[in-house]
Amino acid sequence: MKAPKFNQITALLVLGAVGVWIGLGEFGSSASRPTPARAAETATAVTKKVGVVKVAAEPYRRTLIVSGRTEANKTVAVTSRGPGIVDDLPVAKGSTVPAGTVVARLADEGRAAALKQAEAQLAQRKAEFDAATRLTETGANPRLNLSASRVAVDVAAAALELARVEVDKKTLVTPIAGIVDQIPVERGQAVGDGRLVATVLSLDPIVVAGEVSERAVVRVVVGRPAEIRLVSGETVPATVSYVSRSAAERTRTYRIEVQAANPDNRIAAGLTAEIALPSEAVSAVRLPRSVLALADDGAIGVRWVDDAGKVAFATVELLDDTPQGLWLGGIPDGARVIVAGQEFVKPGETVTAEVFR
Image (cartoon, rainbow, N blue to C red; front, top):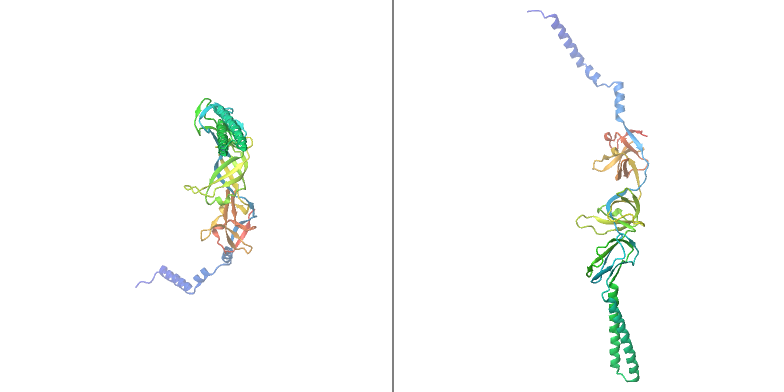
């Protein structure tokens, strides 16, 4: 039998020493026992650090923007009240006229003669009635004849009134003040009953009409101030004058109207415009979009740090989205809102807050 070699003996001794060391628990106790440096790191990791800003709530009016078009405050279509021939057009298209202005005259065509005849007949019937009355008082005329004479007077008076109406029909006037927008007839043209002769627009005040959704209609109140923004970039102060109480059947939207002063008629009808409708002022803060977070139930809000250093969650209402940030309602005044590190903390967790300026 050969004697073991020196290398083999050395290996056996090393293995035995390792086994004794492991058996005494030195390896496990050394690995599991935290060093003073590691213990300090563990204690520090318990409290997370977040960046916060202290917010100050301020009154804010959110604005509802509605697309619309300018319209005339009043539009009157002046039409003929009977057949005739256009004899005169004393006003021109585009001219500004007061109420009661004659915009067209029809040819007489015997109307004046018929009026004179009716006046003469009424005068004759009245004279006959006076004579019959005197004769009846003396007993020379039966009372039945007096009644017939009175009826003749009434018939002549009615005929005179009809003749006057026919004379009035030849003069066509505008009942409102405004701009003569259209005159679709010419002198000498024959027109029938109800034919359009002129269109008159009243542009002061100017009206801008638009449509709002069923959710937004509650924010539009008659009498509240508004603002009109024209395509030229000009803004004009206005007032809400009408809110429909019935939705359009197909779009489920509600018609609204605002009015603005237009004394020189420089704002025409039919222009594209925007209506800015500010609502009542509410308490709000402006914050960057990155602060928004979702709660476990899906609510949108922000995380903030209370006086005890714990994370809290506040559900917010998005009031407006501007280039400078979001205007949010529902955040307590003076709250320390987390703007950095909010993704790594949860409500109820204690944190160290570092205020950002």
